[in-house]
Image (tube, rainbow, N blue to C red):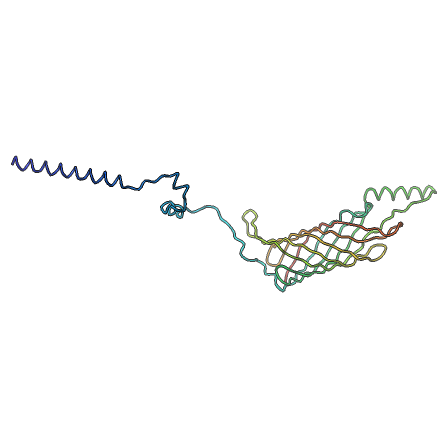
Length: 247
């Protein structure tokens, strides 16, 4: 009996010693992870890569893949309203416009535009007019306001759309937009008669739906008018807002 107890105690001692040795060996062979080094080498550490792939980002991105509105071999009609800046200091002019554009490809289109102008005197023009009227009523010599205001114009334009994209406002939906350049020329009718006009500009269009667009446009125009002293070159800028409808 005494011999049996001694053997049992010896067996337990050997078992505990072997277990401790195996644990120490496993601890020494365990992979040591240095957080700083692994973060710096992110992409080479498979463990960290697997952890990163399991993290779901809360941010969302929208990638521009293709145009929402296919503008190839299509016709677009539009209306616009704008103001003319510069030109005659005595007249302020607004423009109501109608246009037709034929989209050859999403990058190029040809268009025809008609503008009807409304004119009124500026404060300086009104002052000169009142002075002339007062001088005439007093029996003196009346000096007329020397102006040559625009009545209407018709121009042909070439449009180029080098930039387009998609955006979202307050996450309410994705809107396609285009930035385009235009150049053209035509005829403008003034109070003194008709003359040629050249134009060039920049525009931004946003598609509200697949058939309706909103546009903002700035154009430079140059032409000659006729006043008492002869021909005069005018350089003006027209800013306009409009709506378009594509078939």
